[in-house]
Length: 166
Image 1 (cartoon, rainbow, N blue to C red):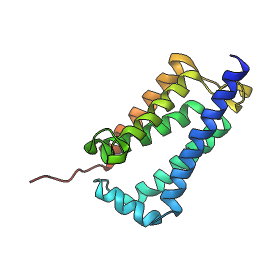
Image 2: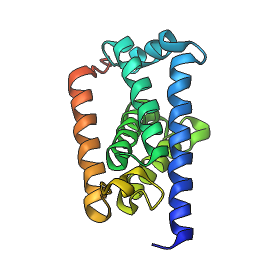
Image 3: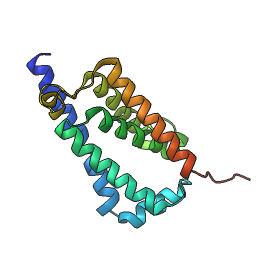
């Protein structure tokens, strides 16, 4: 890969990582903090919402830091995709596409970017590459999708109880 391409991958990893860290930090310390996040999650039909709030914080901050470092990049991308799948399915899908209407536009972009980054790999400027751990191509994208779908399915099966409509 060329030096500009590796620099671009570093930029994408760091920016996506920073977005995820900021999102996790906001769930933890912003606005209503854990209690507010838990209340929002309860409203989405998630059981054990305080536990879910903490899991969200740890996942988002952890995945963001791993992405910025280029460490376990495929698994970090899977965590991002899983968070975006849950958010898209439970919070944004009912509102349509556009983000300005609370739609899924934003989470779709972040989720697709996570899959693409899984396929591209972390680039030259990453711990994965230095340690010989980089997974790229179809295998990288496959790891991201498979782990994210399994994690999302498990979370929804174990904790999501949608409100009954009458």
